Structure formats: C-alpha cells, structure tokens
Image (cartoon, rainbow, N blue to C red):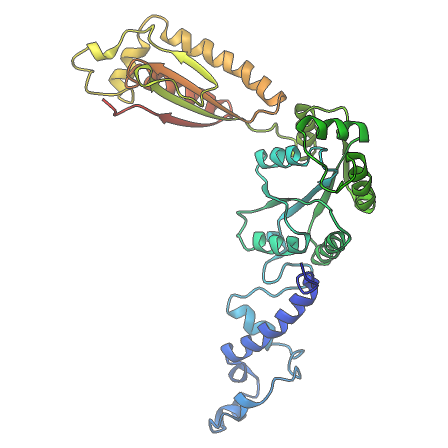
Amino acid sequence: MTEHDAEPTAQRDQAHSGTGDDVARHDTGRDTARPETGRDTARPETGRDTARPETGRDTGRPGTDQDTGQDNGAQVSTGSETAGVPEAAIPELVIISGMSGAGRSTAAKCLEDLGWFVVDNLPPALIPTMVELGARSQGNVARIAVVVDVRGRRFFDNLRESLADLDTRGVTRRIVFLESSDEALVRRFESVRRPHPLQGDGRIVDGIAAERELLRELRGDADLVIDTSSLNVHELRAKMDAQFAGEEEPELRATVMSFGFKYGLPVDADLVADMRFLPNPHWVPELRPYTGLNEEVAAYVFNQPGAKEFLDRYAELLRLIAAGYRREGKRYVTIAIGCTGGKHRSVAMSEKLAARLAAEGVETVVVHRDMGRE
C-alpha cells in the first residue's frame, strides 16, 4: 500500500467537489439563469464566455451554483454528509477489531445474522469509501460492519486517518474490541496448530505481545470491549446480540421443506418428520393427479385421524426448539416433512406448518423439493 492509497478521503472529496462545480456550471447553463440575462443573451455567441476560466468569483453568489445543482436533482454536501447523499442515508458503521484468536470472526457472523452488511479484512483506508457506497444504495445497506486487524504501524495510521474522516462526515460509528488473556490465546493457537500472524521466527507469546502493543491505542478508543478469555462461541454471540439486536429478539429463519423418502433424505435437514402414518391420497383415484397444494387433497389429509393433532403438537414442539436455538445463537433451521413421494401428504403438512410458524413471527420459506418429479 502506497502513501497515495492512504491519502485522506477529506482531501479527495475537496478535489472532487471542485471538479463537480465546474461540470455543473457548463451543463446547466448558469449564464442564462444569471439575473443579468439580458446582457448575456444579447451578446453574440463568440465562445468567449466558454473559454473564460472559472475563477470561483461567482462561487459564493446566491442562486447560481447550488440552486442550479439542486434543480438538476443533485444533492449538495454540507460537510456532515457523504458526498452527494443526504445525511439520513449514511449507514451505521461498526468496526470489529481486537486480538487474533479472540473471536473477531464469530462477532462478524453474529452481526451478519442480525442483518448487517459485513466486510471482512477490509483495508482501513477503504472504510470511508465503503460507507459512501453504502450511502448510495438508497437505504439497501443501512448497517455496515467492517473487520480489521492491525499488523503494522502504517496500517494503524491508515485506520486513524479513516476514523478522523468518518468523524468529519458525521458517520455514526462504534468500535468493538475483542480481548483475551495470553493464556487463552496461546491455548487457541496451539489447538488449531497455526502460528500467530506476528510471531515471525519467535514464539506465539512474542506475536501476542507485539499485537497487543500495536492495538493498545485502538483498545483505548473502543466503544465496547469484550473479554472472551472464558467465553465460548454461544456466550460471545449472546453478548453481541445484547448489544446490537436492539429490543427485538434475534430473528430465527426457518425453511420448511417437503420431500419424498424414495428420493432420499435432505442432507441439510435439522429436523425430520414422517407423514407416512397418514393414509396416502395417491390411492384415491380422483386425488392422485393433484398435489398437496390442492384444497381437496389438503382437506383429505387433515380429515385423517391424527393429522390435526400432529400439526398442533409439532408446532408446539417447534416453539420450544426455536427458543433454545435463539439462546444458542442458531439463526437458521431447516424442517423437513416427508412422505413416500413428496407430492401429497408432506406438501399439505408443510404448507400448514409454515403458516403456523409465520404467524408466530418466524421468517419462513417453503420449499417442495420433490413435487412434480413423478
């Protein structure tokens, strides 16, 4: 990375704003909108005004550059905004850093599950650019999490410059620093049999000491410090949820999948239920051509003894399981409902079960894996 790459974003924005003003003047015909329009309109088209250098003499004149830019749909930056984007569109930013082996990846995955746009190992000099791109997404990227690690003095200087630039733009940012004891970090590196990124030809403890010294200032600036020395993965996720999930409980997303046992079990299923205890509509001639999406087929299935009772009790069981999944940090679950061919019973039950889950606030997707294979 060169010094040119690390040029402060504020300087680049200043250079860009000057260029943008010149382009706006030529494109919008500022002279025709100037109050002294009579004099300029009567003047022959000699090209003299076009060749005349723009000196900035008119920059502060009201009703010229800024008004013209706004008339053409451009947004004027006020200094507390990302260039060309209203302040309300600037995404929220979280920077995740800390000691190698302290759980940065786990913290990032937790934010990703909470709906954050996560970028891992982004060079610090590019953080303002990432925020600007998010601001241009028209609200599609409202929260950005960036994972950075510090492996050199120049790298840290770039991060400090980027943070200062973000402050001048009025970006809401937080720094999450993951800490851990030397003993815990050594144990984790030895368990995966990998060297510390900064140990070089020395020992693991030498790399830890070097990294801790480089991160000392950043740790002091952190908004949230989490010591993971005695935390497992689930406990760390719970702490991140408590900080970033807000008042709402973290979402659980469920995929309800119907399938046919004769085509094999879904390899990604977390839970499997077997509907072959119910009579098969396949043996009813008038129902055989249809699927479980047909109202007559669904009515036939749920009029059988045990069908409604199964739906009620399985939905109740899933409420219990879902609460445990949330506590353990599991955000995705695939529920497989099977019958012989995946066409009638499993399809009808999957539809009803998905509706129950959706009514209880679980984000649910229904997939009929084998319907139509016959």
